[in-house]
Length: 203
Image (cartoon, rainbow, N blue to C red; front, side, top):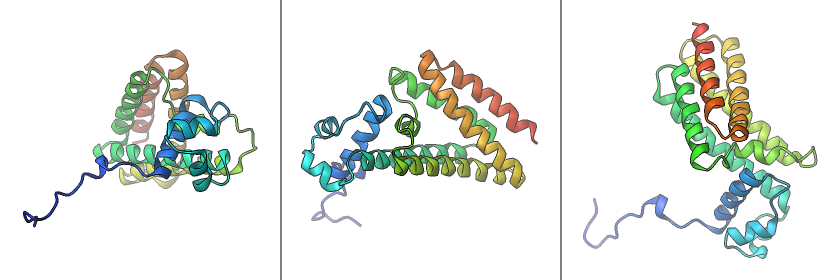
């Protein structure tokens, strides 16, 4: 119980970010919008309000290590959204339909700039950054596992859950990119409806 002498507890969301976290979030945002090749370490340092020395202190591997950290950050962010969406709905089909609407709204609100941070970062590394590609593969596997778990909880068999999860994540990634190119939420809306029908057809 709080006494008069105690300071009120700070809201974690209001706590200023540490330098490392600020660098990671800035890297993720820049690579999400500009891609890996289009983002430089100097720009990351400038926009994160950090010195180059600080960037290389936390990330001695330079840009490749920053890219890997950015992918892992994007993985955690989307996994959190996906897990909450799937838990909020009794039906996985409904959850995916709602998710596509949320993704579409987020893209539109960012003026079609903020697509998938994992895909945006890994595309263009051309096999030169195994750490980034490994982190991206782990991200996709984690997202598929979340979808598959939700499907199993809803009564789907192991094989159907696994294969549908592959389909869901692959379709969402493609639809998000198509929505960016078209500057329209329609690709995500269409894919959402068809994924929901596909999932329901297995019942």
